[in-house]
Image 1: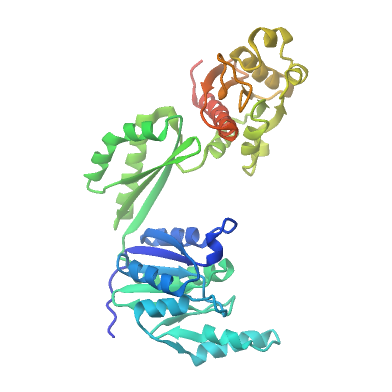
Image 2 (image 1 turned 180 degrees about the horizontal axis):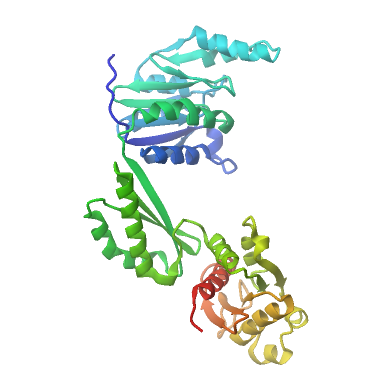
Length: 427
């Protein structure tokens, strides 16, 4: 059968294994493969997880071959009865499985090096789809396979990452580079904090048509991610410099439209961007948390190197703790209540004073499900931030959702309040 050598432009990944359909296993291989395909400019159209069902998997492979140029399967190449990938792909491409003597000898030699006799069941790992090119596996017994199916390609890779990754980074990438069209995908991720997904979409709509009709078009995907909006900008072009120029122009237009709502233009989340800003100023931050109970601090210190800018944190849940730890005046609490702008501001000022930090942020609120009143319903949170130059900001928000949702979004508001004060040069 003659092989038609045409560029590979689109791909689909099928992760095989019933265990990954449960709640305790994650398909990390697909993320790795997506990054490698992006480097090559191959557009990943779909990812699926398929259980150990030969007929169902063959159906998935057949459907994928009808809509993309490249299908990559991971897993299901072991020696046991539930390892059905080889047989399923053979069914899909209508070719027989044949035992390869050279592959069998390689598997036997691997066991021999460990002073072991190869179990009989491992013999099935020497079964290869007729016409396949073997992809050597230096870290396991299951070889990979490259199968040309007319102008399309199917690749079989083992599931364990320690086996799959060197195979992909070595021989597979080498073969794929010879089959790409010369174009590249250039991507940028922008993080917004403040607008909702629908409000962000509304403000972006005028840009969509403009980006689509440019000589180098820019595609955009908008994603909501727990209080942050992620915009993924993508350009596909055979001129990498032109693609990057198009991306930079689009990023500038988003910045002009959203202003301080743009948290990051490099894809980093709020916690990372805030750390960058604090480190750039050489400032240290103190936190005073009531309803969030240390959540904002935890998010900050999850970032490596955060000891450069996190000074200390106070979890002051009770009124007495606010008095004892931060010096909040009892009269202030009595007059306004713990969930109020005067108390939040006093908490922030107390945290900065006691810690000696350059900045401080305070969070107080009613996370629920109880504790709300008509004047201060569940979801009411107050955020205050202050710095050593005398600048302060305080705001009250009413957040929807359950207790976990309110606490998470309150921590987001607090971290974002610090970010906004750092980028605001006004008095």
